[in-house]
Image 1: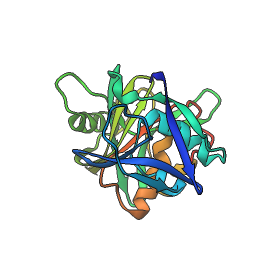
Image 2: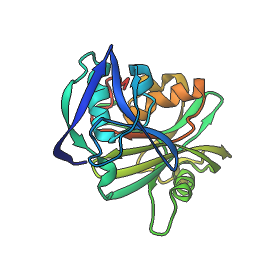
Image 3: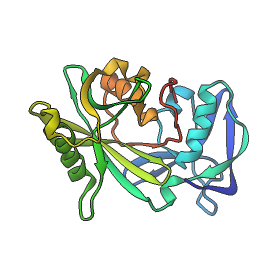
Length: 238
């Protein structure tokens, strides 16, 4: 992700974030006022923190900075550096499969040297000529032994030049024997969905949203999230 020197204006009124309302081929999204020089005037809307956390706000890097501070009680005001990871060609594209059965989500657990654990959503790099959807299913098979059918794309996540796609997948079969799986030393495990907000899971900003969506309904359009979090243990609510 790169940050331009040109600032983005962050405005609050009556405790709500002021954003412009725009539309693209996938529907509505929000942008910071003045973030698109030369663009036609757009209507402005006021979002509460709860609303902003589930809105598509661009640029995603700046949105992460603002939401992180706001959720921690110190909402920034005035100019904030523009950070738009979507504008940078990715160095790696990854696809992941969100598989839920009986109230539990399938994750890959990695055990650290100190005995602790961290988790990832099953997935991996998209190969040349492969779609993210196909990659999600291939990686799911390689890492867990499950086959599946791709459903809606839940999220697009940017971090350190990576562009990651996460799909809801309806999977069949059972997790394969460890010796048949290729998951870089990890192990497939089922984790109750309600434990996701407190689970050290990458992507960190996606983990609590999966729990929320599972309870309230899956998003109509993919969430767009920059994620600069490097420590997975502390809770994330933005």
